[in-house]
Length: 606
Image 1 (cartoon, rainbow, N blue to C red):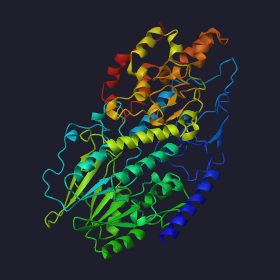
Image 2: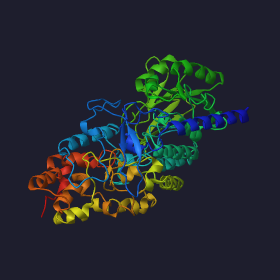
Image 3: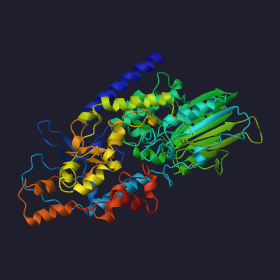
Image 4: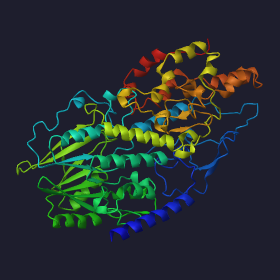
């Protein structure tokens, strides 16, 4: 039976993979997915709208013409995240590579771009906890289960990693929380105490679509296996990946031996993933099951994935665990807190509900669920927290819980550093230098202009150029090409999520390049560092006019100069596209912008 099931798995995966290849425009990737009606919400396999606009990449001798489709989005539309699409969120028609000498007529970019910066900052910040990813002194010096007696078994709960394999570190790793590299050290320290550990995860390992998130999902699955996770649920964002990818990465030959548990979710075939798991440790029989909330069903667009009513599927699963004499039952609920509680009330027999719902930090204590004997525990956001649930042979206090911040208290795990180095190598091997391997295709800048590099600016703006060369912005690329050894010395300049703020000519929030923006170390020496044009916009027409390469009267010269001006009152809005709550929490403190502006202050031409 096992051989037959595995043969069926391979056949179905092959069939689905063939359909994925034939129905999907292969070049569609990170660069264009940002324009979907909902960020990170795309049909699987992706089907573009009938009224899609056509965007043609620059046709040069070095790069063949590439045509990709982008869905049309009307300004004022509201995404599933509650974001209002501004005029500047809508991709503008590209500018042909061989433009005439006369500069194109483009709208003044001074007013909409700050608004766009605010919108993207709100979007990025909305994924952050209320306090951001900053570790307090107490979180860097935690006492773990200091007053606990010896437990029979300990459940470790995590989830909502949301793509954050590691904290950014740009503002000091000691100040930031999260990361698989630290989590492994924490789990090892718990096992070193002789504890019988049962790690559980409620899902959402990724937050975007495209080849990089697929590689990230594979890397995470491997890491969870290394950390000996007992059970893992699928998160709603995981289920937006290719069904083929999910099965290839997560399914085992025998579902009972695999980590992933899916009670009301079927991917390709209901037999690929178990609906329950039983773990026997410390004389305890622990039953585990997992559901995806019905509220999230509408986000799953793939015909390969079926989401059933959670209560309808959960009730017999819990009955099965009770029939197996499980003395403790844990539900991994990838659902809102409200639905998690409602499900626990509807299905008796559950002892603890580990929920993906809630925002910010998990609560200090388990939350009682009215109308149920179960309690609810949150996992927090972005993998910044874990939690331990101790089970005891004590009628008065059979269960204890502690929230744990994954802070710099837990040193980097050498084996996870090795896995992360392999992840970065895979990004390189995927062909990022040529853009196509990760589906990261350049798009036209909203202004229609091209990037020329900071040195061109320095021909006239000599003082400002020297100030820039003395700032950390000048060394931004170098910091990921030759990173400090305290992070394993792992290069990150093939990682779009890193280079988008460490080079010139990329969209810092959506991780894709603009045409004429940074392409590689070899081809883009003039665009290393976070240069002048990241703040002031591409300078091709301004530079061409000032150098006399195009005919420009005084009126046009003045217009092109004005287009490059970034008023100080709008500068902070531009800064926080990179200095957001994920990467620069201190930049959002009162008076921070004024403080940092003093370090890089520059005005106009000498």
